[in-house]
Amino acid sequence: MYLSQGVKPESVVWGRTDGSSLPSNVYQEGSDLVFRNPSPEQGGNYICTITNPDGSVERINVYVDYRPGKLIFLLKNKMNFFLNDHF
View 1 (cartoon, one colour):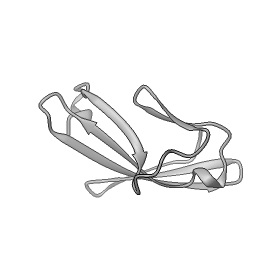
View 2: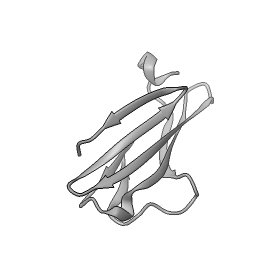
View 3: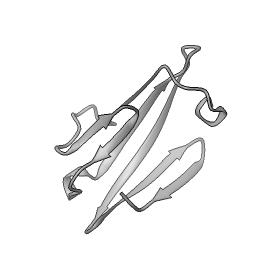
View 4: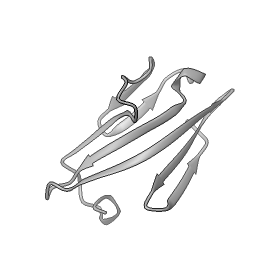
């Protein structure tokens, strides 16, 4: 995985796994997915598609759960899990 090796990807694109547009107040800024004014509508499944310099593509699925006052992110990629509960 290039990201873990410190190699800058050619592109990073965020989207919803079902192909729908990003919810209101969710947008991509550079390679980051930004959530403004968290709400229940922002929860759900997202995907980060990374294109590496050699043309290979990596996809990271992210599940976002809304709880009053915070968003909880669960990333699953190659059996690794990461939980982040702050924004």
